[in-house]
Every structure is written in structure tokens, then in C-alpha cells.
Image 1 (cartoon, rainbow, N blue to C red):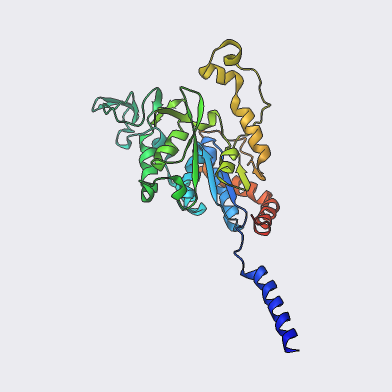
Image 2: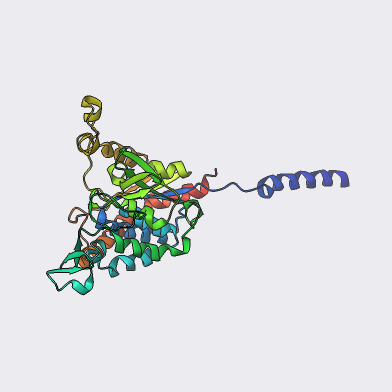
Length: 331
């Protein structure tokens, strides 16, 4: 009898150990994708508030343009409420235009070889050959670079964006080769500044031999990038209000004409965006049809944050289903 009890006890212990004593498998990894869209990025902050309220874990982030700025700061540990305050408190026109506030009352003024109109600099160039911004562009973006630098200074000098609280990737485009460049290691503010460099508006950023501009030219919603980082499921926030069918025609392939003209005709970003939208597990596109990339007014920012919250709330059940999937399906 004693021997039989001992054998049963051993069997029960073995089964229990196999269930509870083995190393637990990791849950599924969640990727967050933040698309580009200038001022409309305020809506992404609103969606993030909903994601936080539902306590959905975020393991990887990829962003483009304003999405790179929101995503980069979020990956550094800023909360949605802190980003909300940041969006509301900035004088965006002055910040983006490098405005000298002391000269805002002067129609035309010259200081240190630079001409200012109502405080905005014209034709400002650095003699320093080591400058990271160089090339054609009306704006240098110095003030916004300084702001981003101050906000991310705790992570200056890190070897890789994988070492941030949330691993991060930033999408830019080499304007010379028309190739997508995934930035994963440099000063964070430099990556964010490169990704938002709208051609013609901002001077390009030089990095590792590349001349970088806004990543939205080729990949405005980088779902594929966050999946390559290891995300099993993806939440994508898209700021584009108009969707377009793929274009198969290319001047480069047909006539050997490349550059911006071929991009404008072939629009490779449309094809990439359509594929990425389709592959997201939860796709969120706030209705921002009344706003533009330059809607940085105080009232517009407030409204777009609210519209982001509404968009996030409208897919609450989808987000909760994703959360259940994340914790019930093990890798």
C-alpha cells in the first residue's frame, strides 16, 4: 500500500512540475507603428492614452516623420499625458521656423549676417563643415532639434535604439539614392529630425554617408519595420486621410528617369502603405479630414488629441481582443 501511494505521489509531482515548474514561455510581442502627418501627429497622442488605459504592453515601436518624434519620445519613457502637455505647450510655428522671438516685431532685421523677417531667418548657413544638416531646404530645424535633444538627453550616446526602454526604429529616405533607410543607432534627436525633413521645407540630415529626408516618401506607416524587429502583433496608427491604389508605372523603369520626378509619378509609398495597412492587426485612422500637416494652432492640437482618443475608443474591443491574444498565445 505504501509503495503504491509513493508511486502515485511521484506521478502527481511529475505532472505538476511539467505544468508549473518548467520555464514559462514569453507572451506575444506587441509592435506599435506611428505614421507621419505633421501636426496631425497630435491625434497619435490621443490614441496612446487609450492604449495606456487598456494596459496593453508595447514591446517595439517604429515611426515615420511626426510618428518618429512621438514614437521616439514614447520609447524613451514619456507617457501619453506628458506628450499631450508637450503638444499643447509648444509654439510650433516659432519652433519649426527657428524664429527669433526678440525680432518678431521687426519686419526686416539683420543680425550676425542673417536676415530676419518678423523673426524668421532667411538663408542662414553654418560655416561649420561638420554640421549634420546640409543641402536645399528653407528651414534648418535647429530649435526643434535642440528641443528633442533636451528631451532625450538621458539616452545620448547609447549604442543602439534597442537599449531604450522600448526598442525603436526610425524611417528616413536617402534623397540621392531614393532608398529607405532604417535608423537604429545614433543620437535620437538626429534620427527624429531626419525622419521629419520634408524635402524642400527642411534641410536634409547627413548620417553615415546618407543624405536623409522625410521617411514618408517611401514608408509612411512602417508596419513591416516593426515586424522585422520581432513584433508578433501590430497596432498601427495612420494619419493619412486619403488612400490610393497602387501604381505600376515608373519613369525610371520605362525611360530611365529617376529622382523626385519618378517618385511623383510612380508613388511607391502608396503601394507600401497599402500593404502595411493590410498587415496590421489593429488599424486606427482618426478622422482628421478638417486638418492639415500645418494645423499647429492651439485649438487644432486640442481637437486632434480628442479625435485620437475617440478613434482609439472606437476600436476598444479590437484592442482588448489583441490583448487577450497576446497573453493567451505563447511564443
